[in-house]
Amino acid sequence: MSRTSRHRRAPRAGEPCPCGLPAVYGDCCGRFHAGRSAPTAEALMRSRFSAFAIEDEAYLLRTWHPSTRPARVDFDPGMRWTGLEIEAFTGGSPIHAGGTVTFRARYAYGGQPGEMREQSRFVRHEGAWVYLDAVGE
Image 1 (spheres, rainbow, N blue to C red):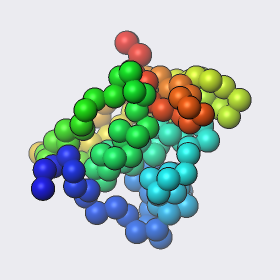
Image 2: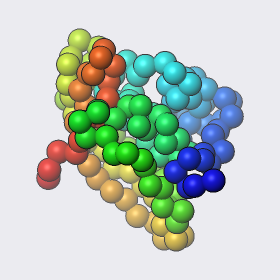
Image 3: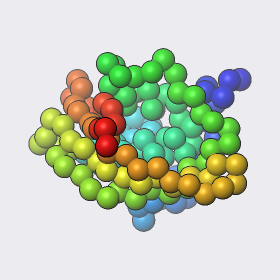
Image 4: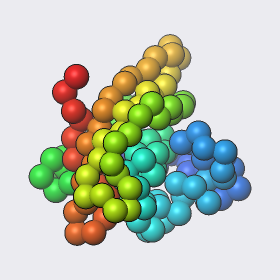
């Protein structure tokens, strides 16, 4: 089985959500991974972080805008996503058509800690929030 087609073990419904909110996975990002649409750009950002953490390629591709979506997601076997901090957001509410979310994502790579910062752009596509791209900084 290729690395892009398998999942790390998803948290059980009662376990903490990888996105860092004080909610269990089943009540937080797990419901979006199971098929519900994220109501805001921030909720989509958090659920996509969780999908990276558990290597849920299908969810990541489903929530990526068709104009920028890759053919597949290549997960690095040495990467483990460990935490998420939302720094700021603009728009992205149920009444908006677009929005941005600025975040810091923590990871361990080969056992060494690191972090990345990005401002992501989200838009509505066919009524649902999707990731479009990263804003150049």
